[in-house]
Length: 254
Image (tube, rainbow, N blue to C red; front, top):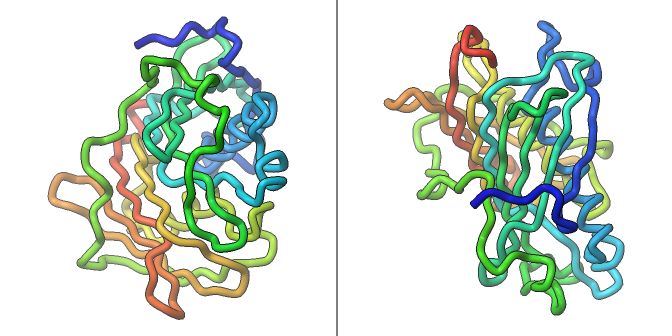
């Protein structure tokens, strides 16, 4: 279903690709894109009355449970992009929020869909959707892209590994490592011959990480050409995220 972007529940925000969003070739990164999505999601939730500060008054906060990003082209350093977002559907105890990423001419650079869950700040357990939110969601689900049908598989055979220390500067308002760092860390262990950006990235968040913990970023190439990634806490072996990426050559505009 196509979203009417003039509808009041759709929020648009303009971004310019900064130096810190781009790589050595001056092309934007998936980490930069994830930062754009996070910024507009937080802004729009606040406008709709269910931002983090408002939920904190009731002892809960939002956490990202899963996100799927599909990029057709990455913007370059200095390029202006517009990101649109809207509440896409309610699914039991989870809220879906979708996105479109556009260039200055309105051409679609990429799309994304995300799954959010409320977390009790005292118990750190996931809870139910706050009352009164359903009015902000369409009666018919309205998605820019569908989630892949199957969940991200567990990584069993490790091809490469990197050891990463979670720093105090990585912590966000919820007291744990911000989700954008998980995008960054998942790609840290990529084999040296993987020189292009992911065409798609599907990430499932499974546990928290806090400052001082060591995270093992692991990955392995799969038979279909995709990569499976795992972020694992070194101290207790718990998975904090599972990731699946697919890749395209730079000649295809990524």
